[in-house]
Structure formats: structure tokens, C-alpha cells
Length: 399
DNA sequence: GACGCGTGGAA
DNA sequence: TTTCCAAGCGT
Image (cartoon, rainbow, N blue to C red; front, side, top):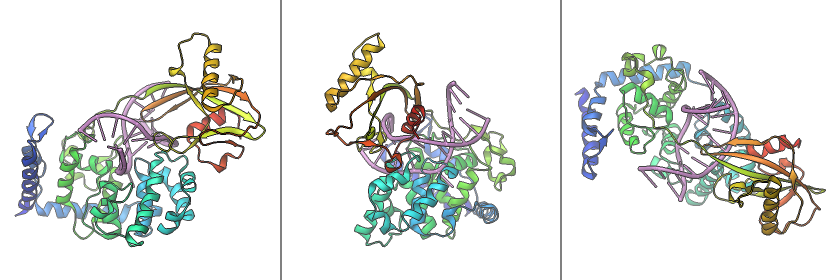
């Protein structure tokens, strides 16, 4: 009876997949045998696991600002901020954001520039626009009333399978898994699942496994307990599986193979890109351009950049600076004389690009700027700046 | 399904 | 210094 429930689930799952195509697992085994091998827990063992985890969570669960209540707006804001971002980084941003935009309606009606400014320094700036987009959808499509199901929540901007599961389970007590990096790691270790978690396809395996052990009465607490576990005793780099509240359920620990899980393929190294950063100053301030509304650092404000790798071949720095000046003049109408600013090169690494910025300085008349979104800026607190621009400011001794 | 999208902290 | 990671999503 015990393993039967899970077997049944598995059969449904595997049959459904088998009908689409014969899924292979690590290119070797039929996925059916592999998943069947993974879950051999009896119903009693599942209950014991749930109790061990939830008892620990009740005693040792972290006291975080967004856990003071189960307000769906609070959950949504925190979850969007926490996407690929550490808890300690998020806390001050969350506090300020809720103070500035206390309700869904307030956020929906805010200026996008203010939302972006509140996100300054947090990274992945599309999240800010997505969050406001979701607020607008809630007002327009639901009249401010929240949908309760994960399926409906996932229709909201910026809310994918993980975040939908998190909001549905935490705010609305829906029995849904919330599968983030923690959940992948925790369950990969508990069951020694060696599917590559970098591959989207692997999510289905974990989804099925987690549903088999998800308690009907406290799904939100369970999901959050898994995250707390994943950031402490079952962390990626410095785990302490021996003292984990679920140590006796952790097959990777019992077999002394903790660090072998989860399996995750590596990503490519960042590509190096070389730019001139144009530090143009006038009586009216520094010239900043607003970046395009899609792509890297979308809508944020920066000094103009000239891609050195797209300039004609030349060996002399003076020639290269002249080429950059010509290109800038051609696209903006501004004719100014640049010189190497004589400050150290600024380096900034994104997930997939490394920028090497050589700063060129120029003085200008405070002329009207008639090209794309650009302005003379004295007060840098008035616009949203990416971190790389703050590095440029520091190199130039601004503020 | 692979890739683009930020940042700061830790080892 | 380098590398990897941290509560993913949209295209």
C-alpha cells in the first residue's frame, strides 16, 4: 500500500511521457527504470520525513521580513526579488520596496522609472518591469482580486513555474511544489537523482518526486522548509548533512556521496568586450544615455559606449580615439575632442559578458541633446544606474 | 531547448 | 584572481 501510491503516480507520469517519445536519461537508461529506482519510500517513511522537516522548520526556520504574514503581494515581491538572488542581498531592497509601493494598486500606478530606481543595484532589471506588469494585470484582469491556483498565477508577468508554486502554496495553501535551486539540490541528494538540473527537461522528474512527498496540510511551510534546508545543512558548497534534520532520509549522505549531487552542466565563460566609455562633461553635468528598452541593462542610464572591436583596424591609440570620436559625432551630431582620461581601465563581469572599459574624457558646451534618450546629469540619484556606471563614476572621482 | 539577463559573496 | 553560486523567467 505504501509504495503503491507513489508507483501509481510514477506510472501515470512515465506513461504520459513515454507516449510523447522515449525519454532517455543520461543517454543510457530508460527514464522509467531510473525514476522507479529513485522512490522507494513507504507511506510511513514519507510521513516521518514530513514531520522531521516541518518540526525542524517550526523550531529553526528563518525569521525573514516577508514571512511576517502570507499576504500574496508580499510573497510575490519577495519571490521576484529572490529569483537568482541571495536572501541577504534582497532584505534591504524588500523593506524599501514595500515601504515605497505598499500595495498592488500602488505598484500598478507607479512610474516605471521609480520602480526601476528602486531596483537599482539588484540586477536582472527586467524583473522590476515584470513585477509591475504583474501588478497591472492583477488590477486590470482580476480587479485586484488574486487568483489562487498556480496555473492562473503563472499567467502573470514574471511568474514562472517556480514562483507560481511558491505563491500558490505559501499565500493560498495550494498543494504545489516550488522547485528552485534549493529544491533541485535537496531532492537530488535525498534520492540520488543524477538528472542534469541545468536541463529544463529534468524539472519534470523533480516535480513528480516532490509531489509524492508534499504534505496536503502544510505545502507552503514544506516548500519554505526545503529552501531553508537547502541554504543550511544541505547547501551547495559547505553542507553539513550529518546534522541535517533529515539526515537519515538523505541517501547521498548515507552513501557518503553528498557533493556528487546535484548534477549540473557548466555554462560558458563570459565573452570579453572592449569599449570606450565617453565621459563628457559640461556646465550642465555629465552626458548620460538611456540604454535600449530591451537587452542588457535595459532602460538604465549610462555614459555612451563605443565598441572598440567594431572600429577599423589601427595600431595607434590616437587614431583609434579619433575613429571613436568620428563615430560618436556621426550618430549624435556632437563634435568634441576626446583624450584618454588617464584613469585605470574599468572592468565589469556579467553572467555572460566581461566589459573592459577605457575612459575617454571630453569637455563640451551644454548643448541641447537632440538624439535618442540622453540628458546632462548632475544629480545621479535621479536616474537608475547600473553598477558598471557606478564603477565609472568612482574611477572619475564623481561623488 | 538554448540562450540572454546582474550582482555580490564565498572559497 | 578565478570560479561558482543564489528563492528563474522570457524568448
